[in-house]
Image (cartoon, rainbow, N blue to C red; front, side, top):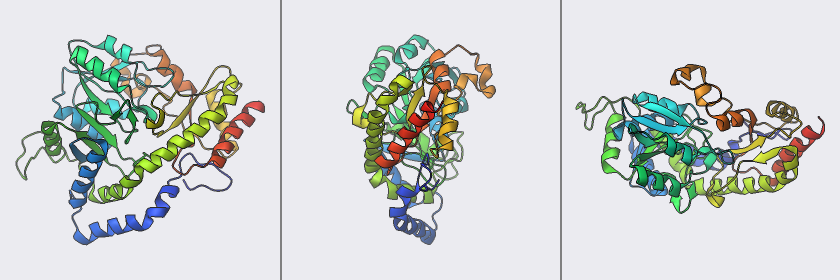
Length: 381
């Protein structure tokens, strides 16, 4: 969405793309010139550059973040009979990735202050069939690396990170992608590092896992016409890789701008705390990259979340909800066996969370407009 003087958009990608349009066009033209549209040289270059930025040895570009989860788990040997623990309040793609390998999804509740995986609940859910804990670094904040690693060491369960919203996020000296055996990233256009279409990547420092993903994404063939595994066709497009490689050197700056905007929000929203507006807690300080800036609209607010969202739209402030229905209550997943009340924190969050405008280039003036609009909407009730 392109911003106008009368609105504050939820996301304004034009602020990122306008200054680098020439570089992007040149990168695309280079691909058109050499014609290597499938696994061309730009894919390898971006894989290496992104892996280095994360601080790991290998990056393998795939078709989407969902595919990154599925292929990464498959490469780790996860399959039927295995259990994978993940939070109930993630985007459904995390569950889809587990489904793809035939493993059983085991959901647990989340922390009410951060919306991140509740590590105590995850520990309690471990059985002799549990092979992987799959933390989702939601909204751009890492689940405690030390907590995850301690749990893995005590139980022998492996870690696979879903960092689809956490490109170069850090916490406690760790970067997203360096905690688990492997990690999935998404390059959906609205992500902190977004393509102009779908795309994803598995990063790892495990050479065996890297080689397996590289084979699985290309029909299970480590070399042409030799199909060692039952793979699929899920390769990062060369043009998308070229675009992403242009954007990657700017990512740290863009992340810092998001964090700065979040600090403005935190400060300005303190006055609305008595009105029931409570931002999700940042426990990673400058390492939180704020893919989303999320507040809870609590019971003390005169408006419920949906009413407030409608009022803000009337005032020209666009917002989002991430996510309104936890995975276990989605109609297509009722056969997982959980019903209403199974994960009370995730269910409460689903009815209260509201994502405010957040993007690189969001200035303090528009941030002030957002907060003022929230205050006005509540006062008018």
